[in-house]
Structure formats: C-alpha cells, structure tokens
Length: 114
Figure (cartoon, rainbow, N blue to C red):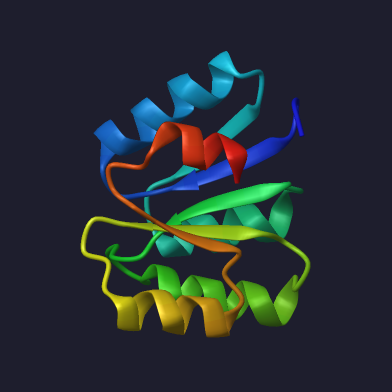
C-alpha cells in the first residue's frame, strides 16, 4: 500500500503532525483535516485509500463522519483513533463500518500494519 493516499482527521495538531511525519517517511501521500466537516468535504472531493479518523472532534464527531462515509462510500477503509476509547465506542465504530480502532497515542507498528 506504499504511495497510498491517507487522510488524517484529528483536531490535535500534534497528533496530525506526528502521524504525517511517520506516514510520509514510509512514502504515503498524506492529507489532513481538523474536524469532521472538513473531513467530509475532502472525502467527497478526493480519493483516499485510508482515513485515520479521531472519535472526539468539534463540529462533527468521528462516529458521525464514519456513519456518513459508510452510507456514501462504503468501500473506504476507516481506522478510528481515540484518546478516550471505550469498549462501547469501539463496538459502535465497528458496527458502523470501521476497519479498526486504535487508541492514542497510536502504536506505530500496529498502525503501519493496519
């Protein structure tokens, strides 16, 4: 999946920056969004191979974005990331179509394997 296009969606600049640096080092093309509304706009107007999506964000949370994307673009893999992850949230995300659920800070090896 090298050279794949990945959208990082997180309201925390430090998380986006860290993920971008790691993924670009691994030769992925990276784009960013700071909230759910920006994420949906970018997903609707660009083609991504993967979305890394934070659960808790302003304007529209990650689960809302996930549900919308699942309806509109069902084949797009989405990995949820959260610093406040619970089993209930992970189960809900999976039911909505998330490919995986990763806690912050993400385990970089697990993330790259995903």
